[in-house]
Image (tube, rainbow, N blue to C red):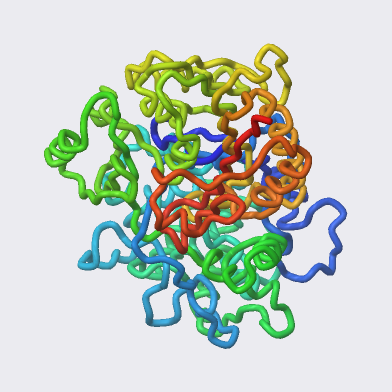
Length: 567
């Protein structure tokens, strides 16, 4: 499963959530960065002494594959593959922080614009920082999903538009740079173990000091100290003040890990990734791993597509002309990239079913099936319903689309999409796709398995995935993906089509998974993708198509079309 509809339903299945501060089960006051039985002499890592993202082994019930709040409206930028902060001899500028006196590379820009005045010192913006800290604490201490937590925090908050944007930016920038921030903070702290509440306040302050252009260092420090008082650690205000002032004084002396002595640690800190994940990306992509790991979403666009049954392209363009949004045509027919929409899910035309929020990568997974009118189609892991809806529209609301999900509340989301769009041929059903149903043997013309996955293809948009995905998670996911493929492939009739997709970048979840499947199932053969997918993407297909954000400007997806032989 991959991109889901942002705002329509921000909840997504993802890799197993975890609590930060493993030494005390994520409780306040627990060992700052020491997991149970951790070696006391452990070297400093990207999380004040521990790798980020310890998980629970990837067990299934936690809900896999769709990063929380990640949406089928992945934001797009026109600037691809530029490494963030190219190395400069191991100094601070080689990582995510901005070099002294220079704007940071690859950061989320202040939506107030280049001409916005710098924030004054004092307590301006305290409410925004209070909201940002609340979200960070829920994500790192309670395993919450960042987008869901942020949406809840902003609803009814009374924050101004500028403060809402500041809160959102601080949440995502801090999560995006957490490994880097922890590394730098570790160089100015007398001891690394501290209260987890203080840890998150320090991270928030460090993000403003090291990675934000328009926030005075005094404002970052003063508001962080105030947040200590508001979060039950007033006795640590002096500690917080001292650490952040020390960070300000020494920020030009901070050093990255030595790239010669610790190359894996260096790149993991530079790109703010767990060490193991950088190693996996490097093994899979070689020199291309730098562009993949450094990719950041600069544009902030949301992709929408018209309801194929309610309006044509000319009519939809006229509808968009009435909006105050910025707009740009996408690469796929009917797709538009929208900017400047505060909450597109509350738009009247969206609510009436004129369009859906769906990424072009997700659309391509549907187009790979090449469905026709009257077909019998199965979408195995369908919630929240974006792909099922697109398939229904492509079929002219004829035939049947069975839309399965494991959880009842997510099946309700599919039904809500169906009602909003006015579609009749979708059948939302609560069902475990890993359990074989004999009555469906050879019944389907086409089956889409958008499988539970790590979600690493949308890491730029959902940085809290770093805190959830572990090596153990990946092992559990690949086993589940194989089991799902072995089960649902039996539902495809001879001559029918099976499409396997994920929003991952790891080859073990993608082409290696398909290669093993084809070896075990000689009745299937891989096929080229249909011409409805633009050539600019199809030209990269091998055993399936791996879409890369840094190269293609869309969210990271893997799509493989397979045909069941007739003989």
